[in-house]
Amino acid sequence: MRTVVLSVTLFAFYCLLSGQFHNAYLMKVGAVMCVAIALLARHMGTDDDEGLPVRYWLRTAMYAPWLLWQVLLANIDVAKRVWSPSLPIRPQMIKVPYRVRTPFGLATYTNSITLTPGTVTVRVEKGVLEVHALTDEAAQDLLSGEMHRRVCKVEGTDPETGAALDRRPPGGRGA
Image (cartoon, rainbow, N blue to C red; front, side, top):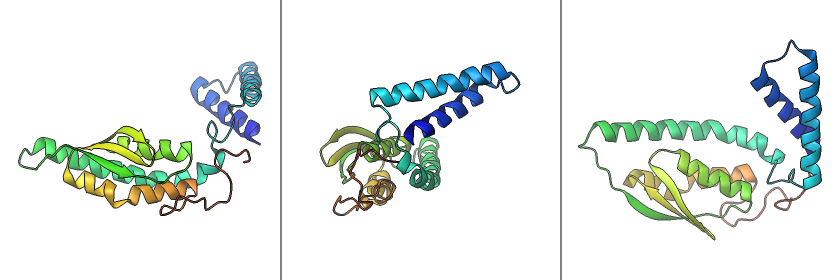
């Protein structure tokens, strides 16, 4: 199933970039190459849950609007602070605990933090992220755990215990 999904995804990307819809020969060559690449990925073992996290796509799509909203709000906050020197900026390093259990969840969480203006993930340690926050408010937002809870929901993890909610082992094959 992963090979099919990867083939279709690669072909859609090929079509988007090439724009060669009118040329049947190029479309056929593109399709053959996408299938060949997907088969090669399967042979190499890179079409696993980490390389192609198909089972997270729907939940990630549901998480994305919330993340985009947070990025927009943080952009507005940082812009206000840049344009108005009277608003406080208090750079600080904070330790943010996490209980995500998969590489996908950890990458999603750390990238979500870094994508949000005013915060940057600096270091990842077992169970703790070191984050640079530009303001007290940004630090408190992270420490409140809302983003962590949402990322745990994406990967199917209980945010309090770190236990799997979807009953599939992390990194397991299956789609």
